[in-house]
Length: 364
Image: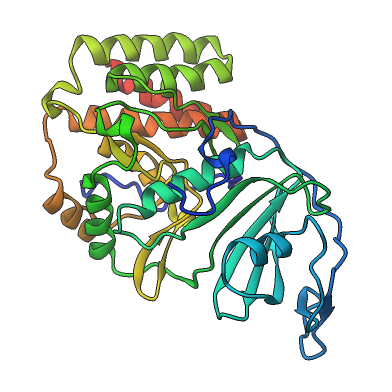
Protein backbone atom coordinates (compact mmCIF):
# COMPACT_ATOMS: atom_id res chain seq x y z
CA UNK A 1 0.00 0.00 0.00
CA UNK A 2 1.11 3.54 -0.67
CA UNK A 3 2.64 5.14 2.40
CA UNK A 4 3.90 8.59 3.38
CA UNK A 5 7.64 9.21 3.71
CA UNK A 6 8.91 8.13 7.10
CA UNK A 7 10.60 10.28 9.66
CA UNK A 8 12.79 8.46 12.19
CA UNK A 9 11.01 7.96 15.51
CA UNK A 10 14.37 7.74 17.24
CA UNK A 11 17.96 7.12 16.23
CA UNK A 12 17.16 3.43 17.00
CA UNK A 13 20.62 2.10 17.69
CA UNK A 14 18.94 -1.21 18.43
CA UNK A 15 19.20 -0.48 22.04
CA UNK A 16 20.77 -2.33 20.20
CA UNK A 17 -3.67 -21.54 1.13
CA UNK A 18 -6.37 -19.51 0.87
CA UNK A 19 -9.20 -21.77 1.92
CA UNK A 20 -12.50 -22.27 0.10
CA UNK A 21 -13.39 -20.47 -1.97
CA UNK A 22 -9.90 -20.43 -3.46
CA UNK A 23 -9.87 -18.37 -6.66
CA UNK A 24 -7.11 -19.29 -9.14
CA UNK A 25 -5.93 -15.68 -9.33
CA UNK A 26 -4.69 -15.71 -5.75
CA UNK A 27 -2.53 -18.75 -6.27
CA UNK A 28 -1.14 -17.70 -9.64
CA UNK A 29 2.04 -15.71 -10.05
CA UNK A 30 1.49 -12.08 -11.02
CA UNK A 31 3.92 -9.18 -11.37
CA UNK A 32 3.26 -6.23 -9.09
CA UNK A 33 2.08 -2.98 -10.57
CA UNK A 34 3.19 0.41 -9.31
CA UNK A 35 1.40 3.74 -9.61
CA UNK A 36 -1.51 5.63 -8.13
CA UNK A 37 -5.06 4.86 -9.21
CA UNK A 38 -7.99 7.24 -9.40
CA UNK A 39 -10.81 7.24 -6.89
CA UNK A 40 -13.72 5.02 -7.83
CA UNK A 41 -17.02 6.62 -8.80
CA UNK A 42 -20.08 5.93 -6.71
CA UNK A 43 -21.51 2.54 -7.65
CA UNK A 44 -25.24 1.83 -7.89
CA UNK A 45 -26.52 0.73 -4.52
CA UNK A 46 -28.25 -2.42 -5.80
CA UNK A 47 -30.76 -2.83 -2.97
CA UNK A 48 -28.89 -0.63 -0.52
CA UNK A 49 -30.46 2.39 1.07
CA UNK A 50 -28.88 5.09 3.14
CA UNK A 51 -29.50 4.61 6.82
CA UNK A 52 -31.57 7.57 8.08
CA UNK A 53 -30.01 7.25 11.51
CA UNK A 54 -26.49 7.64 10.21
CA UNK A 55 -24.80 11.03 10.04
CA UNK A 56 -22.40 9.65 7.42
CA UNK A 57 -23.48 9.56 3.77
CA UNK A 58 -21.29 6.47 3.39
CA UNK A 59 -23.41 4.30 5.70
CA UNK A 60 -25.77 2.10 3.67
CA UNK A 61 -28.38 -0.41 4.84
CA UNK A 62 -29.56 -3.27 2.68
CA UNK A 63 -33.29 -3.30 2.05
CA UNK A 64 -34.87 -6.54 3.23
CA UNK A 65 -35.24 -9.01 0.37
CA UNK A 66 -33.41 -6.80 -2.14
CA UNK A 67 -31.30 -8.71 -4.63
CA UNK A 68 -27.64 -7.89 -4.98
CA UNK A 69 -26.53 -6.27 -8.20
CA UNK A 70 -24.99 -8.87 -10.55
CA UNK A 71 -21.20 -8.76 -10.44
CA UNK A 72 -21.10 -6.78 -7.20
CA UNK A 73 -18.93 -7.49 -4.16
CA UNK A 74 -22.11 -7.92 -2.14
CA UNK A 75 -23.27 -10.67 -4.50
CA UNK A 76 -19.87 -12.40 -4.26
CA UNK A 77 -19.97 -12.37 -0.45
CA UNK A 78 -23.52 -13.72 -0.29
CA UNK A 79 -22.77 -16.52 -2.75
CA UNK A 80 -19.38 -17.63 -1.45
CA UNK A 81 -18.85 -17.00 2.26
CA UNK A 82 -21.73 -18.84 3.94
CA UNK A 83 -22.44 -15.84 6.16
CA UNK A 84 -25.97 -15.11 5.03
CA UNK A 85 -27.27 -11.97 3.40
CA UNK A 86 -25.40 -8.68 3.63
CA UNK A 87 -27.28 -6.32 5.97
CA UNK A 88 -25.10 -3.20 6.03
CA UNK A 89 -22.27 -1.70 3.99
CA UNK A 90 -20.08 1.03 5.46
CA UNK A 91 -17.84 2.95 3.10
CA UNK A 92 -14.63 3.56 5.03
CA UNK A 93 -12.61 6.00 2.97
CA UNK A 94 -9.91 5.46 0.38
CA UNK A 95 -6.21 5.55 -0.39
CA UNK A 96 -4.62 6.84 -3.56
CA UNK A 97 -5.62 3.72 -5.45
CA UNK A 98 -8.27 1.80 -3.49
CA UNK A 99 -11.57 2.27 -1.66
CA UNK A 100 -12.45 0.56 1.64
CA UNK A 101 -15.75 -0.88 2.88
CA UNK A 102 -17.06 -3.04 5.71
CA UNK A 103 -19.83 -5.57 4.97
CA UNK A 104 -22.04 -6.77 7.84
CA UNK A 105 -23.99 -10.00 7.37
CA UNK A 106 -27.01 -11.57 9.04
CA UNK A 107 -24.74 -14.19 10.65
CA UNK A 108 -22.89 -11.43 12.51
CA UNK A 109 -19.76 -12.00 10.47
CA UNK A 110 -18.07 -8.82 9.21
CA UNK A 111 -15.79 -8.50 6.17
CA UNK A 112 -13.35 -5.79 5.19
CA UNK A 113 -13.20 -5.14 1.44
CA UNK A 114 -10.91 -3.08 -0.76
CA UNK A 115 -11.78 -2.34 -4.39
CA UNK A 116 -9.63 -0.72 -7.05
CA UNK A 117 -9.48 0.26 -10.69
CA UNK A 118 -5.97 -1.20 -10.81
CA UNK A 119 -5.21 -4.68 -12.07
CA UNK A 120 -5.44 -7.48 -9.45
CA UNK A 121 -1.71 -7.98 -8.87
CA UNK A 122 -1.37 -5.74 -5.79
CA UNK A 123 -4.33 -7.38 -4.04
CA UNK A 124 -3.05 -10.84 -5.02
CA UNK A 125 0.30 -10.06 -3.39
CA UNK A 126 -1.36 -8.62 -0.28
CA UNK A 127 -3.75 -11.56 0.07
CA UNK A 128 -1.10 -14.22 -0.33
CA UNK A 129 1.12 -12.43 2.19
CA UNK A 130 -1.58 -11.99 4.81
CA UNK A 131 -2.62 -15.63 4.58
CA UNK A 132 0.98 -16.84 4.84
CA UNK A 133 1.33 -14.84 8.08
CA UNK A 134 -2.12 -15.95 9.26
CA UNK A 135 -1.01 -19.60 9.00
CA UNK A 136 1.68 -19.05 11.65
CA UNK A 137 -1.01 -18.51 14.34
CA UNK A 138 1.09 -15.86 16.09
CA UNK A 139 0.22 -12.20 15.44
CA UNK A 140 -3.41 -11.19 14.86
CA UNK A 141 -3.75 -11.28 11.06
CA UNK A 142 -6.97 -11.05 9.02
CA UNK A 143 -7.80 -14.15 7.01
CA UNK A 144 -8.20 -13.41 3.31
CA UNK A 145 -11.02 -15.12 1.39
CA UNK A 146 -10.45 -13.68 -2.05
CA UNK A 147 -8.04 -11.43 -3.91
CA UNK A 148 -8.26 -10.94 -7.64
CA UNK A 149 -10.36 -9.59 -10.49
CA UNK A 150 -13.90 -8.35 -10.03
CA UNK A 151 -16.65 -10.49 -11.61
CA UNK A 152 -17.77 -9.95 -15.18
CA UNK A 153 -19.96 -6.87 -15.42
CA UNK A 154 -18.83 -5.37 -12.12
CA UNK A 155 -19.17 -1.63 -11.68
CA UNK A 156 -16.87 -1.59 -8.65
CA UNK A 157 -13.50 -1.39 -10.34
CA UNK A 158 -11.19 -4.05 -11.74
CA UNK A 159 -10.03 -5.85 -8.60
CA UNK A 160 -11.00 -6.49 -5.00
CA UNK A 161 -9.88 -8.25 -1.84
CA UNK A 162 -12.12 -9.67 0.93
CA UNK A 163 -10.84 -10.44 4.41
CA UNK A 164 -12.01 -10.69 8.01
CA UNK A 165 -12.87 -7.36 9.58
CA UNK A 166 -10.68 -6.75 12.63
CA UNK A 167 -11.06 -3.89 15.10
CA UNK A 168 -7.56 -2.44 15.14
CA UNK A 169 -6.34 -0.54 18.17
CA UNK A 170 -3.18 1.34 19.04
CA UNK A 171 0.17 -0.21 19.76
CA UNK A 172 0.18 -2.48 22.78
CA UNK A 173 2.80 -4.21 24.87
CA UNK A 174 6.18 -3.97 23.11
CA UNK A 175 7.59 -7.09 24.74
CA UNK A 176 4.63 -9.19 23.62
CA UNK A 177 4.92 -7.79 20.12
CA UNK A 178 8.62 -8.71 20.01
CA UNK A 179 7.90 -12.23 21.24
CA UNK A 180 5.06 -12.86 18.79
CA UNK A 181 7.04 -11.45 15.87
CA UNK A 182 9.94 -13.78 16.69
CA UNK A 183 7.54 -16.73 16.92
CA UNK A 184 6.18 -15.81 13.49
CA UNK A 185 9.73 -15.78 12.11
CA UNK A 186 10.44 -19.15 13.74
CA UNK A 187 7.28 -20.79 12.42
CA UNK A 188 7.42 -23.57 9.83
CA UNK A 189 6.84 -21.99 6.39
CA UNK A 190 3.43 -22.54 4.81
CA UNK A 191 4.96 -22.71 1.32
CA UNK A 192 6.82 -25.78 0.01
CA UNK A 193 9.65 -23.81 -1.60
CA UNK A 194 10.41 -22.06 1.69
CA UNK A 195 10.18 -25.36 3.57
CA UNK A 196 12.90 -26.59 1.19
CA UNK A 197 15.14 -23.67 2.16
CA UNK A 198 14.44 -21.27 -0.71
CA UNK A 199 14.07 -17.51 -0.37
CA UNK A 200 11.35 -15.46 -2.07
CA UNK A 201 7.60 -15.79 -2.31
CA UNK A 202 4.83 -17.29 -4.41
CA UNK A 203 4.06 -13.93 -6.05
CA UNK A 204 5.84 -10.67 -6.69
CA UNK A 205 4.38 -7.83 -4.64
CA UNK A 206 5.12 -4.23 -3.73
CA UNK A 207 6.90 -2.35 -0.95
CA UNK A 208 4.95 0.87 -0.82
CA UNK A 209 4.31 1.45 -4.51
CA UNK A 210 7.64 -0.06 -5.58
CA UNK A 211 7.53 -3.44 -7.37
CA UNK A 212 9.24 -6.08 -5.22
CA UNK A 213 10.46 -9.17 -7.13
CA UNK A 214 10.28 -12.41 -5.16
CA UNK A 215 11.43 -15.14 -7.55
CA UNK A 216 12.74 -18.12 -5.56
CA UNK A 217 16.49 -18.45 -4.97
CA UNK A 218 18.49 -21.01 -3.00
CA UNK A 219 21.02 -18.63 -1.46
CA UNK A 220 20.12 -15.73 0.83
CA UNK A 221 23.16 -13.62 -0.06
CA UNK A 222 22.35 -13.96 -3.75
CA UNK A 223 18.66 -13.23 -3.17
CA UNK A 224 19.29 -10.14 -1.08
CA UNK A 225 21.93 -8.63 -3.35
CA UNK A 226 20.04 -9.32 -6.59
CA UNK A 227 16.33 -9.11 -5.66
CA UNK A 228 16.68 -6.32 -3.12
CA UNK A 229 19.77 -4.08 -3.35
CA UNK A 230 20.52 -4.31 -7.09
CA UNK A 231 16.81 -4.14 -7.90
CA UNK A 232 16.52 -0.80 -6.09
CA UNK A 233 19.73 0.46 -7.70
CA UNK A 234 18.38 -0.34 -11.15
CA UNK A 235 15.22 1.62 -10.37
CA UNK A 236 17.24 4.59 -9.08
CA UNK A 237 19.37 4.91 -12.24
CA UNK A 238 21.95 6.87 -10.27
CA UNK A 239 25.60 6.17 -11.25
CA UNK A 240 26.98 7.13 -7.84
CA UNK A 241 24.53 4.92 -5.94
CA UNK A 242 25.14 2.05 -8.37
CA UNK A 243 28.92 2.26 -8.00
CA UNK A 244 28.74 2.35 -4.21
CA UNK A 245 26.11 -0.40 -4.13
CA UNK A 246 28.17 -2.77 -6.25
CA UNK A 247 31.13 -2.27 -3.95
CA UNK A 248 28.95 -3.00 -0.92
CA UNK A 249 27.61 -6.21 -2.53
CA UNK A 250 31.15 -7.33 -3.31
CA UNK A 251 32.38 -6.56 0.21
CA UNK A 252 29.55 -8.37 2.01
CA UNK A 253 30.43 -11.52 0.06
CA UNK A 254 34.19 -11.10 0.44
CA UNK A 255 34.02 -10.49 4.20
CA UNK A 256 31.24 -13.01 4.85
CA UNK A 257 28.84 -10.77 6.77
CA UNK A 258 26.15 -13.48 6.69
CA UNK A 259 28.43 -16.41 7.53
CA UNK A 260 28.19 -16.10 11.35
CA UNK A 261 24.45 -16.84 11.02
CA UNK A 262 25.19 -20.35 9.73
CA UNK A 263 22.53 -21.86 7.51
CA UNK A 264 19.93 -19.09 7.33
CA UNK A 265 16.38 -20.41 7.62
CA UNK A 266 13.71 -18.74 5.48
CA UNK A 267 11.37 -16.84 7.80
CA UNK A 268 8.05 -15.33 6.83
CA UNK A 269 8.61 -11.56 6.93
CA UNK A 270 6.08 -8.77 7.02
CA UNK A 271 8.59 -6.91 4.87
CA UNK A 272 7.57 -3.29 5.56
CA UNK A 273 7.33 -3.09 9.33
CA UNK A 274 7.03 0.57 10.28
CA UNK A 275 4.84 2.30 12.87
CA UNK A 276 1.95 2.83 10.46
CA UNK A 277 1.59 -0.94 9.93
CA UNK A 278 1.58 -2.00 13.59
CA UNK A 279 -1.37 -2.18 15.97
CA UNK A 280 -3.41 -4.49 18.19
CA UNK A 281 -6.63 -6.48 17.93
CA UNK A 282 -8.30 -6.98 21.31
CA UNK A 283 -4.92 -6.31 22.90
CA UNK A 284 -3.08 -8.86 20.75
CA UNK A 285 -0.21 -7.55 18.58
CA UNK A 286 -1.15 -7.20 14.93
CA UNK A 287 0.45 -6.08 11.67
CA UNK A 288 -1.09 -5.19 8.32
CA UNK A 289 -0.30 -3.76 4.84
CA UNK A 290 2.58 -6.21 4.31
CA UNK A 291 5.25 -6.71 1.64
CA UNK A 292 5.67 -10.38 2.50
CA UNK A 293 8.43 -12.76 1.46
CA UNK A 294 10.54 -15.52 3.02
CA UNK A 295 13.94 -14.19 4.04
CA UNK A 296 16.46 -13.74 6.85
CA UNK A 297 14.68 -12.84 10.07
CA UNK A 298 16.98 -9.87 10.75
CA UNK A 299 15.78 -8.22 7.52
CA UNK A 300 12.52 -7.42 9.37
CA UNK A 301 14.39 -4.65 11.20
CA UNK A 302 15.08 -2.74 7.98
CA UNK A 303 12.39 -0.16 8.81
CA UNK A 304 13.37 0.10 12.48
CA UNK A 305 14.31 3.77 12.01
CA UNK A 306 10.61 4.42 11.43
CA UNK A 307 9.08 1.84 13.76
CA UNK A 308 9.86 2.99 17.30
CA UNK A 309 10.89 -0.43 18.64
CA UNK A 310 11.80 -0.29 22.34
CA UNK A 311 14.43 -2.14 24.34
CA UNK A 312 11.66 -4.39 25.69
CA UNK A 313 10.74 -5.30 22.12
CA UNK A 314 14.29 -6.35 21.25
CA UNK A 315 14.87 -8.18 24.54
CA UNK A 316 11.73 -10.27 24.04
CA UNK A 317 12.49 -10.91 20.38
CA UNK A 318 16.04 -12.13 21.02
CA UNK A 319 14.87 -14.40 23.84
CA UNK A 320 13.08 -16.41 21.17
CA UNK A 321 15.60 -15.99 18.35
CA UNK A 322 19.03 -15.30 19.88
CA UNK A 323 21.00 -12.45 18.38
CA UNK A 324 24.07 -13.34 16.31
CA UNK A 325 26.53 -10.66 17.39
CA UNK A 326 29.30 -11.11 14.81
CA UNK A 327 28.76 -8.72 11.86
CA UNK A 328 25.31 -7.87 13.25
CA UNK A 329 25.84 -4.14 12.71
CA UNK A 330 26.93 -4.61 9.10
CA UNK A 331 23.85 -6.73 8.40
CA UNK A 332 21.62 -4.21 10.12
CA UNK A 333 22.97 -1.44 7.92
CA UNK A 334 22.39 -3.57 4.80
CA UNK A 335 18.76 -4.11 5.72
CA UNK A 336 18.31 -0.41 6.45
CA UNK A 337 19.87 0.34 3.06
CA UNK A 338 17.20 -1.57 1.16
CA UNK A 339 14.43 0.54 2.68
CA UNK A 340 16.31 3.82 2.36
CA UNK A 341 16.86 3.05 -1.33
CA UNK A 342 13.16 2.27 -1.63
CA UNK A 343 12.27 5.58 0.00
CA UNK A 344 14.60 7.39 -2.38
CA UNK A 345 12.87 5.73 -5.32
CA UNK A 346 9.46 6.61 -3.90
CA UNK A 347 10.06 10.11 -2.58
CA UNK A 348 13.51 11.34 -3.71
CA UNK A 349 14.87 14.20 -1.66
CA UNK A 350 17.21 13.67 1.26
CA UNK A 351 16.95 9.88 1.17
CA UNK A 352 19.74 9.83 -1.41
CA UNK A 353 22.14 11.28 1.16
CA UNK A 354 21.10 8.65 3.68
CA UNK A 355 21.80 5.90 1.12
CA UNK A 356 25.22 7.32 0.30
CA UNK A 357 26.05 7.64 3.98
CA UNK A 358 25.11 4.03 4.79
CA UNK A 359 27.10 2.64 1.87
CA UNK A 360 30.19 4.74 2.59
CA UNK A 361 29.99 3.60 6.20
CA UNK A 362 29.88 -0.06 5.11
CA UNK A 363 32.90 0.50 2.86
CA UNK A 364 34.99 2.40 5.44
